[in-house]
Length: 423
Ligand SMILES: Nc1nc2c(c(=O)[nH]1)N[C@H]1C(S)=C(S)[C@@H](COP(=O)(O)O)O[C@H]1N2
Ligand SMILES: [Mo]
Image 1 (cartoon, rainbow, N blue to C red):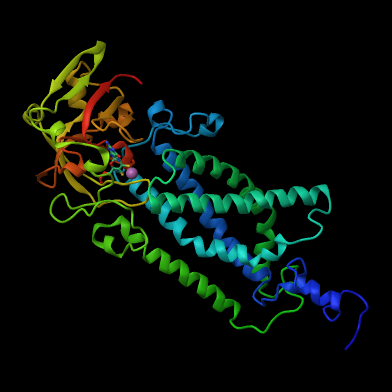
Image 2 (image 1 turned 45 degrees about the vertical axis):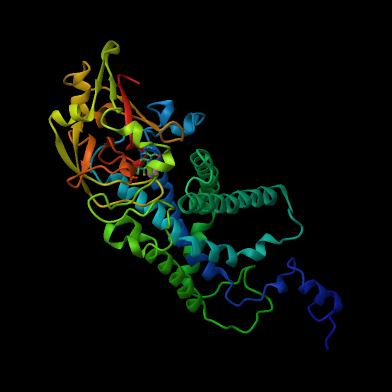
């Protein structure tokens, strides 16, 4: 045995060191190296950019700067710089955006985990910081890795467990995204040129990720990549179905703890049931329920369901698209136009914003505000029926809002009161 007299793997000290993750020889997978890290990095560069953009767009879709009722992040300050009036066209806009955001996020999980695995030896460097610059670099990596894990974990928990953080999900995911993206941009600017060189040269440039003392390979690097890609494909195939009525049963990983919607005209996804929301039949009966509509100078009308059915009725084919990533195909809604209701209380011609309140007494989604452009759209309805049948209690009987291109949360169910006016 050759003794180097120093901390080579052959000495007793070296052998002990090799069992410590702080030693380079502890990390033996021959898969690690610049190529694998670069491939995964480039996939994440593209994927996370799409996640960030669709996330910002989804946030804007809530019209958070319209009313405090819609705003879960009132202290956003300049982070709300890009907000705009959310469009009603095309009518599947939110469905597409949020479908991409959630499905892509879930699909990227194996890639993210593989990327973290590929660089894990760097977590264990000694000394922790060699210089001020090195310390700053390591703090930025902490924000990068911590931010990525935080965003993926909060997103997945919200989709899977449905309001595990009541109300605060938006705040956590929103501010987390800004912290993460700052570290991500810095990392991308620093690393992309090198990743690109690594990929183009296609030959192994040595770096600190290459194990000095590699184990026998059990799988090729391409094989490992296929494994990661296969994991992503599996997640994709068991998630994407939640966006299409006919594929819903393939969405094994999107349980979304809603009620079983059953068959028939009302047989599409239910978010919160009437029972969950505390809506009692006694409050929605023909005798008990009245819609209160308030408008210009406090002008108020009270309408029964029969009064509403006697008004001009219109139809619109629109989906429900939830922030959690599920959506329905277009359903055939029928009811009274929002702008006709505005006209009843003194806003003929150009309707203002509206605040909608539900019979529901508790819960974050019992009220929502919509902007004038949404009220004015002739497809925006106070729906009384869907697919040719009265709404069921779970879909919002006696009346619910449906607006093109808006997030599901704005489609208030069991509407009790609508207040028109500039918010
Ligand atoms: N009153 C009330 N309306 C509500 C909700 C709610 O919890 N309470 N959930 C909203 C959300 S988040 C969505 S996605 C849609 C779902 O409508 P659906 O259950 O008819 O599919 O209803 C919206 N309207
Ligand atoms: Mo939702």
